[in-house]
Image (cartoon, rainbow over all chains, first blue to last red):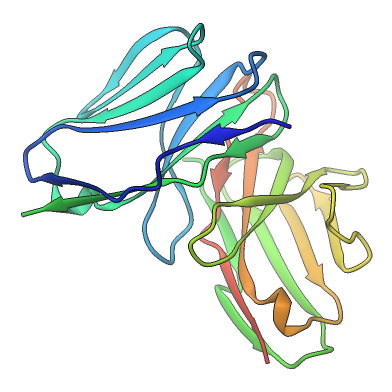
Length: 110
Length: 117
């Protein structure tokens, strides 16, 4: 069974700091990796996706993928209080379904 | 772009009644739509995968006769919770994947909160 593991947190960082969110997955055949942000009571919102090993940057967000270690991370630079949310890591093999982690709660204090 | 809507956003119903939830892709055609359920403080659990024009594929443990899914067009999928009971109270979220673009990204609807009394 495919598993995606995330630390539930909460991860607390001060405003302006870098938040680092981590995710490991069990299925070596996984090809696509996604980070979603979910505010309380709302549905997930796509932040980034990454397919290849290495880093991918989009504004304040950087996704990092290491397939050999089965590890994907999300860095948020210059964290803002509005970034406080639960961040969901999702993994997809081929063109099929997403397996979600349970999410990491991020709290950014002013 | 890639906007997905759901209707209704919330619904309260009596035990034993049926509830229909609509999921629409507003600015793209979705060959595949997904239905998830999320209980408080839990992650999203996939219920079923719906492909336009064919029967939905249900995940293990999801009763297909209770959760009826119809993907009648490339922009609309519906989930009907039949004979709802209080334990069906949850946050139901659909997602849609654009077809023909070479991407496997899923875009989520805003969710429907179902409360069964």
